[in-house]
Length: 275
Image (tube, rainbow, N blue to C red; front, side):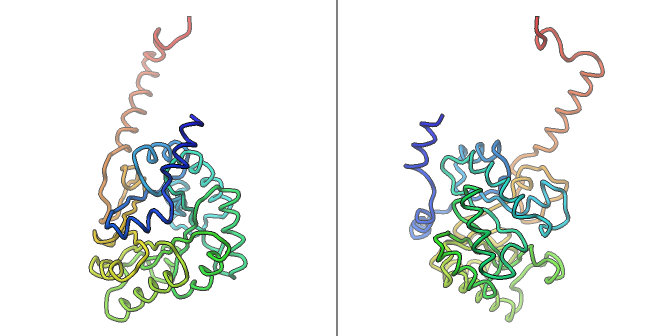
């Protein structure tokens, strides 16, 4: 196992440079969120190029209404598990709310912890022109940064809810300016979330760095989904999500069958008992 893992790491690991090359060649790539070793290993083996340890863990793992309560220590815990399961995928760790908003020094310290203690390959933070200098500082420390503009969940209260961004001329110009600021600051890619498909296509054609869409149409260089949405593990999913499996229903059926067999003394049977 260790030999196979080492070979995959040195020969086939997705990197910020390989993603840039894929944009130049017009090759699309896929990113999924992951929060533990088991799913990281499954997604990695399935050919997912980038694994994002998203602060969405606050919603789908912790059961919270927003991502805001997620802490840096919690992100580190989940990033370490994902990194252990990723032999070829690029592992990106979300910088949680409060870890980079106060000052650039705090942001650099938090990003360093995610790389040193979490084994991340890159970090992601939300915002455009407002975080341009913060991105510059983190990049200057030798840490790859993925940007995130448009609908930014950490600003949910400022936005007045989860609203599509970039509608109307003024808002469109703001989103474009944010995307350009992220690129100019040195980010290697940028997530475009919750915006009209035409706007995301325009940004993708303008930027030289890869764009990764979520609720932003098909013209982005890559696409990302939250794993719980994609696998049918949530009670509700956004309208832009395609559900590729219904693991929630399958898990329910399996648990129900187990409970019934225990109640009827059918499990464990002879086959599943020690002699």
